[in-house]
Amino acid sequence: MARNIFHSIRSPYGLTGVNAGEVDAVHEKTLERVYKQQLVHVSGQSDILTMGLPFIGPYNVNSIMNPILVYCLGLGYFFNMYKNKPLVRKGGVLIMSHPTRNEFDPVFHPSYIDFYENVLSETTDPIEIEAKYEKSYAEDPWYIHLYRTGNAYHGVHPFYMWYWGAHALDHLGAVIILGGDPKVAKRLGFMAASTLNDALAMASAYVGTSPSITHLHSPPLLMAQVE
Image (cartoon, rainbow, N blue to C red):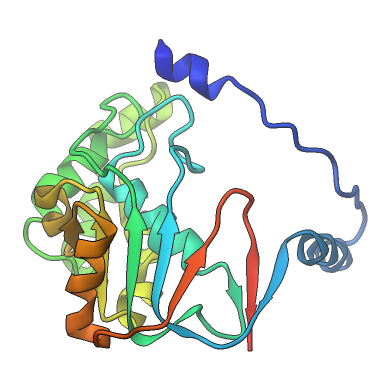
């Protein structure tokens, strides 16, 4: 009940534009509005990128931000909020703050539970995950039934959330979850730290003891133009 009340609070956002017509032309006009509102110019990449993740993303309205969705929001969405090149250099470290507990909503995300327990316990490699497991989840009759008749996401949905972060996984040297459950972070293939100082000490193994640091502030969302 508390979560439902909290999620029902509307943000005081206004309309930035209305466009209609041919698809590509509308898309171009829409991007102009987005960049005018959100684009932030940044000089150069850093060794470490820090970010705080919110309690909600596209796939957990009135529900729980489970570990797979934390991963997707941080590495799939926030990491990729850039133009030209990432905010953090190749081989750098991402520190993202979120409790990241072993909590799942069985009504909305049933296949996420099995993905976490049975797939990620074997591998976190997106290529291997796709080759060995995706087909069985996509065609599972129970997942299909829950998707068609209930409120569940499709059985294959956690796979696409995992693939979404593949670029970040390939780019980064390490990911540290600040405030995250250590067992959950390990299952995701990451590390956990209880304080920012601890996280920075852990990151030093990858970027040295005097790293440059960029903080991705949110809210509001932004698109970084990295030069």
